[in-house]
View 1 (cartoon, rainbow, N blue to C red):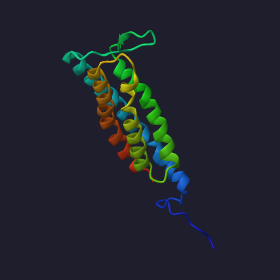
View 2: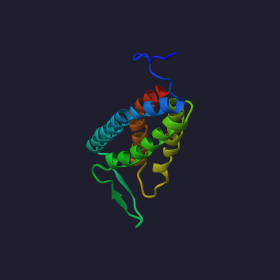
View 3: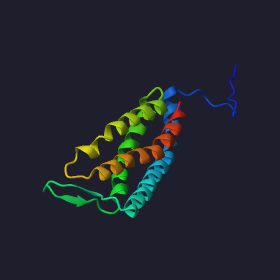
View 4: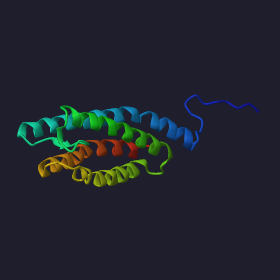
Length: 153
């Protein structure tokens, strides 16, 4: 008895192989989300600077120093890297990576809202602008990544 292989039928693959191929495609979404977050941060920073809100923050010397131009983008890029690592890990090991990413990052953003208020020698207006920047960037990034991760099976 001979067996024939149907060229139109692919062999069954394991769940791990399927997940590996699914996670390979999230790189573009993560890159797009990171760039979108940095763009939004840059625009937000420009609006804040144009509005005249002080962006002076406390320093170790006890005196306030201005946030450098592009500082919002730089911090967003740094945290985007952490988000990419989290997303890749969840895509590989979480049962529901999209939901897990959305919940985890939302908790981190909520926790981060207190950080601007913990820095000494900062005007309340500056603290509010910095806290709002966390929400603005998160609103641009989290939905993109969570939606892409939701498609990982």
